[in-house]
Length: 360
Image (cartoon, rainbow, N blue to C red):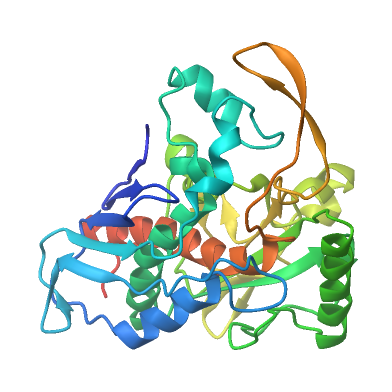
């Protein structure tokens, strides 16, 4: 299975399965001597952790990382940074029926074909959103590195079930339990999640993320562009089905005179009057906020009966999915989006250091 991100400066490997003894990650390429605040990292991981609120799965895990290498006296030491999170609340019996009856909307069938039925099907195995906890270890560490460089990565819930957070997104909302700018809209979204859960169903939504403080000149054209790197990491999040930057798909209905971001000079620096480009031109940062949105599908595990087939008998079969599942993945995915963005930007930022025009 391809579970390795190889960037310009960083190499990240994610390992484990939803119901294995542990999940974890190895991050190679970090400079030595970077301080890592483990309490800050734990607060970040807690935002993604399951079983913390009414809109999350009942499965509760502490998600406390154990570092096996790469840290010495609270700082990176140059060795690969490896950490694990032990799985302590697994219930494999919930998935016994799924060995031969694939769940609609999951990777059960495609994994069965690709790996000859030898994959771990408990909780989705290596395809599970549980692996995003390991992604958040890496991202949480790198968010601290970026903060030292005055770069901020912040995401919010833009919409759930068609209900939009209409307020401008200009300040972080990571201190909120439900990360919307408008608390009123957040309550409406929570009500929509509760209604879906009561109906045995689920809902999806959109997460918006900005990256502030990235200097102009980061990135490259073609295959090493900022959009490419961010998209690659964001699509490692199992529920993500789409991504757009800046004005995104709305650009298709705009005229060039409307979409082009005019330039000006402010405090001796070149700025743009608008930011329809989302802070990226030709794959390279313009110095404006990098802005993107990710579409998150409804949770595929729902209580309603669904049509499937038995892969042994090749006969139709009605499937009732048991187990513990989120009626909406979006709230817990917000820090995961931040983690993915942090990994992409740190990799490009460190590459800029190596090129000699950026210094920490």
